[in-house]
Image 1 (tube, chains in turn orange, red):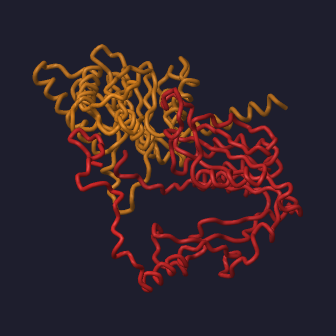
Image 2 (spheres, rainbow over the protein chains, first blue to last red; image 1 turned 180 degrees about the vertical axis):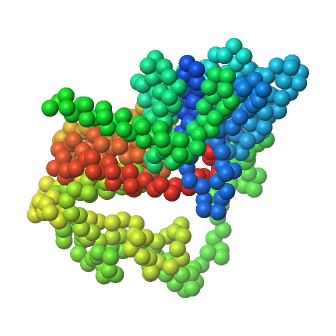
Image 3 (cartoon, one colour; image 1 turned 90 degrees about the vertical axis):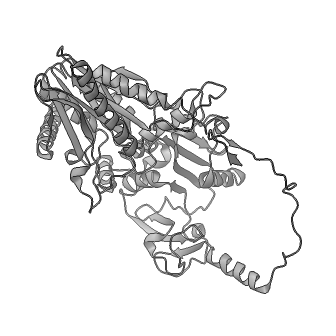
Length: 256
Length: 266
């Protein structure tokens, strides 16, 4: 049945599937794993960074991007797109233009929800036009609004968007999400450091080569966004490993 | 077949008559054609070679090394599981390899394939000869491990809600032990080499079981390989596996850390 209804985006199958949109969601699973966490006073975005080819300039391969950087008021909207790189670049450009256009027209920076809705509406349009295919990307969008409340939104190729407390997209996202469901507790996000460690721990579940392949960025309330260097990520990773060892020692002591 | 503006594929009507009419003339085979065809057939032969040398195994592999347990791994995740969990305990010795060539191979020269380009390696356990026991075929049990993409799994639920990766099993009538995971339900079918092996075993009444891992990452992936772990508790493999924590370390090393970033997918 799938083969007759899956070649055109504008065709529903008899049982109500839009196969091209579902296939676009498979394209997202081919990208790296990204995780987003909403803490009490902080939002964290982490992504798996694979090594680049020898001759490629590593500096140009940045996955976490700012959509809008409110320099004077120190709010910002950070995002990460997972899936087809070229589709991500196009959507990020459109979103950035929209952020500036909004600021010029309304003299207020965009709220996180507004820009998420803009991106989601754009993605939905491409699921309803003939001759075009859906964007093969999912996004995690984080930031603080004027009211100081942290926000995390996720969009997918069909154009839906939802607010989340913590979520993961990309390869093995399900495993990471299950880890987050078990470990996202009030204690875990009580302090900023704990929220950062939770994001790194979640990524380490699926990242095979450890801390040097993790890119991390945070925004704290009323502070500019901060991209972590590899060394800083390594520091957290060593701390996590130490805690793990201590927990295992305690366990073996108890059982003895 | 033609694609319309909207991208649907339709069968284009042919006005030149039916496609069944074939020209009878001009199809006579010249001796040259026959020669080329024979050369191609020789090139495509599957050759069983003994142990990294170029001497071929004249005797059938199973007669020379009769075995009671035969484990086949197909696909890079299944092979990684076998090499890190099963083959690291005990000393396994390579007894031979199979080399073949067809038009899809990237090397043009079939006679000088190095050992690393063998398509299939055969190993036997040196320290435990009973695994290769003295009763060929009578007590032989075959285990096949392979992977498949989760979108091939036909189910009423949407693939997004499946707990991938997950394991399914399919066994022949003579296999009496219980499988360590649920059996593969209809209408799912098995394809390619695992299907051929299982069909052969069913016809010749050899007990065999296939463990099929449905995953959404077809490349070498830690989580997919670990999905095969329940197999280690089955009766046939329990005796072969000794050191599990060490295996996890070996597995991590196998995962290439220089997996280059694909430029298409971010």
